[in-house]
Image 1 (spheres, helix red, strand yellow):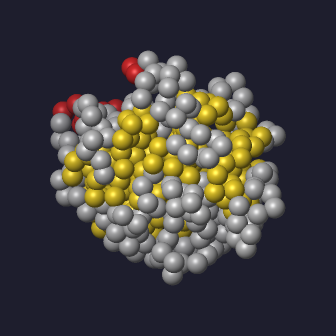
Image 2: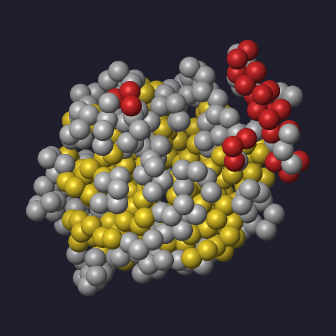
Length: 431
């Protein structure tokens, strides 16, 4: 039994323990550490794969791809417990496809409740797994031919993963993304103008309410609002009510003018580190990452980092942070690369990791790190109908290609999501 990269004694013991633990379960699960799901923008299908725990190789699940019952989805997100996948419709297809994740990685479509606006772009789930937030581009009465303000739909999540009756929050023009602090914003990427069938996304992200080491008593929600008409992209901050998911603006957010912290020139994605201290936004036009400190245990207001911004590859459209909060990864659509950075937790600054510039196939749109071992990274490659896989070094953050990468998937995969394979997977958190 060989584990290719981690050679510390403790790491070997952890992997051996994982193998023994998995070996006590059914044979079909022996070597599957996690599941990866790729969503096709053109067919609405979801390809499902098992992650080999030793190699990171993806093996397609029997019966895959699975129908989401949506046309041209924009993104997807999984419940924190790994039991439900939520696929978000795109354009006028303003629905959420609720799909149960079987213990064998198969998907079962349950329902498609309506979103309260149109052209949905991104989604996030709070740290308690009780509320789903979906950012959309247009409120009722507005459209691409008659542009207007967007908003956020808030769905309560029942214990079985189904969604309750939604409520709505009206926002400014073109809110661009939604995600969670654990640890990515899974927004639809804003692609070059030559790609016309993807809506211009917005991003929203939630900070964790469980960062006890920071003394946080609130869960903060951040909406990256492109404000295209005003040409003043901004970050709108809110306190989330754990009771019902409702949002109350932070002192630094003005809901009359829809202004908050500056969000660069053309924001495309957002992530918060696992400790809840820092927030990062990619700017697809400037080819940069902007960093902010989340101020105080109760205020939640954002302060720009002195060391910000940080250079990326061409047209960065997605960002994620590894589960231990040590490394940041940015998917660059035009460069077909993933930029790697070390994260300094004392001040939030990003430094280039060894081997920065991991190459994918063409047009990476979304990036995920499987939460079981926390060492395999995958991108959905829109222009090549494939998934690229990389193995990250816990010591340096460097990415090396997974064997047999790249993995074929349905056409124009717009997003990729990963979940652990039940309670049998153990995350390797080598300090």
